Amino acid sequence: MIVRFPLLFALLLGTGFARADTLYKCIDDSGVVLYTNQKGGGRNCAILSRDLPVSTYTAPKQAPPRAAPGDFPRVNEDTQKGRDTDRRRILEQELATEQQSLEQARKDLAEGESIRLGSEKNYQKYLDRVQALKDTVALHERNVEALKREMVNLK
Picture 1 (cartoon, helix red, strand yellow):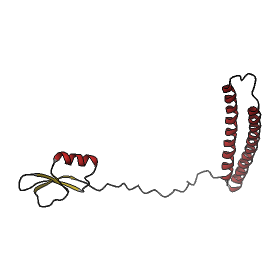
Picture 2: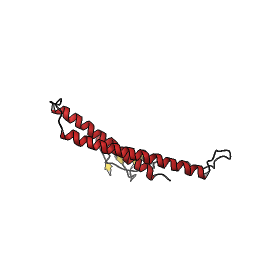
Picture 3: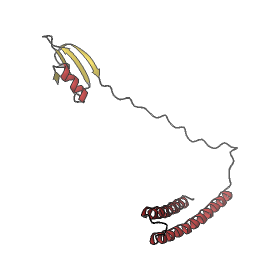
Picture 4: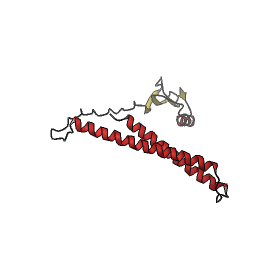
């Protein structure tokens, strides 16, 4: 691709159209300046730019995991099993409590949606109260799901 006009050349470079590995500026026998990506037969060619390969970064090698020092405190297997059992029991209690709270929040929402209080002459007040009840239900639902996920991750 030979470009004879510097302005056109600049436009092509600006739009990303000219994609050459190496760009040359050559002067032909009649003294006309040529910009090209092919060295060709022109004399006095000079390299204007050269696309170089992108350098890559090699991640450092990770050290092998180190063993715990000999004086590192260890828990025997029975103690750890006892702790795991206690944890499971606590999570089960929290789950049961959260499920009860969720059921109560759902009842409160059903009752709250069915009744419009006398102090709620403005419909927006009713909507705000019901939205607060919906938010409470959503909170308890998220808590139940989180507790179930935590129990699945137990050993």
